Image (cartoon, rainbow, N blue to C red; front, top):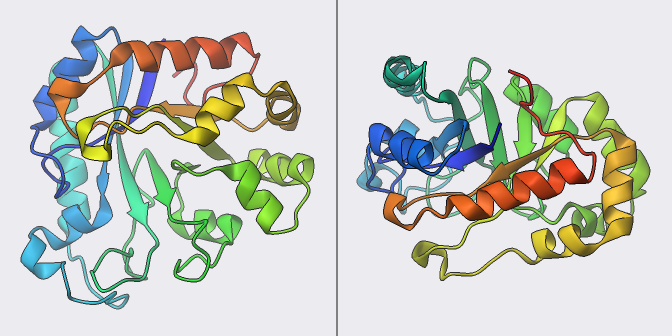
Length: 249
C-alpha cells in the first residue's frame, strides 16, 4: 500500500484546501493511506492574529481545539473508509520564536494516530532541546521526525548512528522521508532524502537498526501534489528491505 503521512488542510495557516480535497487528490493519485497532519498552531490558535507576534506562550491553553480537529478528520474519513485509509496526525512545532508556534506544555496530543515533530535539530530554540526520546514520551502517540537530516543531527550530538537509530526503533520513533516539491517551498527538495536514497551505508544502518520510515509529500497545495514522488519513495524504501511505519494496518 502506498502511503503518504504528511498533508495539510485549511487548518494550517499556509494551506487553503479542504480535508475532502486532500483525500480525493491522494485517492486519484493512487495513494492507499493518507495522513492529515496540520500544524499544531494552526489548529490551536485558529487565526493568525492570535499566533503571529504573540511570543511562544508555552503556558497557553488550546482548550478543545485539538479534539475538535481530530473529530472533524474522523467524520470525514468515515466517508472514504471503503476507498482509502485516512489517519489523523498533527505536525508539532518545537520552535520558540516571536510567533506562538511551539506546542504548549499542557496540550494533549496523545489521542492522535501519530505526530510529526519538527525543529528538533535547532537545539538552541527547540523546547525539546534535542532530546527526541523525552519529547516523544511527552507526545504519547506514535512519533515521527519530520524533514530532518538525522545523520547530521546524530553526528552533531556526538552520538553513534547505529545505537541512536536502534534506540529510536525500540521506542517506536520513525523517520520521515520528505519528498516535497511545490511552489510553497520554492520547488526545493531535501538534500538528506537525496543522499539517503543513494547512500548504501546509511541505508544499511537504518535497516539493521529496525527503525521504521515514513514518506510524506508535505502537501500544502493540492493542485501541486505529485503522487509519483510518493510512489517512488515508497518503492525505494521497500526495495531496501526497510519497513514503513504503518505497513499492514
